[in-house]
Image (cartoon, rainbow, N blue to C red):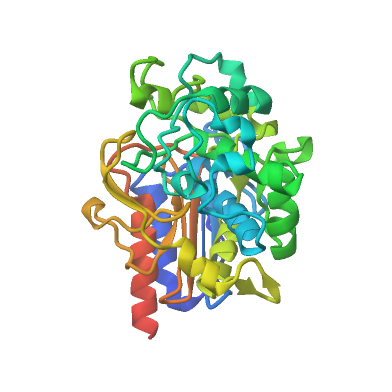
Length: 379
């Protein structure tokens, strides 16, 4: 596309967000992307632009959805918190209370809280798994039920890159009787009107933007002696995998949720307002407050950088030059996407894109900074 055309709506008070969004294309390499902001539940930014593929053959449309990678973990986490809010899950209870097979491998003491706070030690299987294993729910949950933790549960934290989704998803399945994709759709997406999916139908796949991978993908080779390798790349995967039918139709909850910025901003807009929006209550305000209490901080055992986790949500990390205030909570994804709530300003924010960038990527940060400048200027 020779000339960028930005589509959608933007309140004049948030013109700085539109400007930063345009600069993400002209200066920071965006190919296709969307950004959305809600204030007190009302949309003030809903913009999209660019191409849904690397070749520029498909425009990014209003109904384009894209693979979120870990940005989807926040919505997944809320599904479990909803069950806890209803008294069906005790966050202090062992995972094995709901999934008895999980007690194998000395995991009888691993609690739901440990998993939500990335402290369980179950960050990867203990045996090498074939590439196709990630598409089969029973294969993955069986491997994790058998696995021993990589450290004594509760003694340290390390990001559960992929295992988070299968463990939380299996608890949801055992307790609710529904597969996690159906539960999220019926309990969160449909009531709130979100275009959010874990596992795509054929028609939904037709709306999905292609992920544009980096020129170099430094994923570690699977190695049964390495925490980092087994946490990140077992079963093996590549960014190109996200463009396949097998990936899109599977349920890989920690990494293959698809959505748009509009829906994610609305979701977090509801959490910023205490869990209710337009008559739809997702969670009690008390449960939200409990969900965003700090659980883990410091150097992460599987990522190697300092970060901070609440119960299923990431918290701002000042050491990483995070522009958000302490009141914010949400989740980001590998490659650049970001979505969060800030009850302090009634903000719901989301940025999604198809071009994967690595360390030094500032696309989301510049949009977040612009959003907060707009809020301050209009206060």
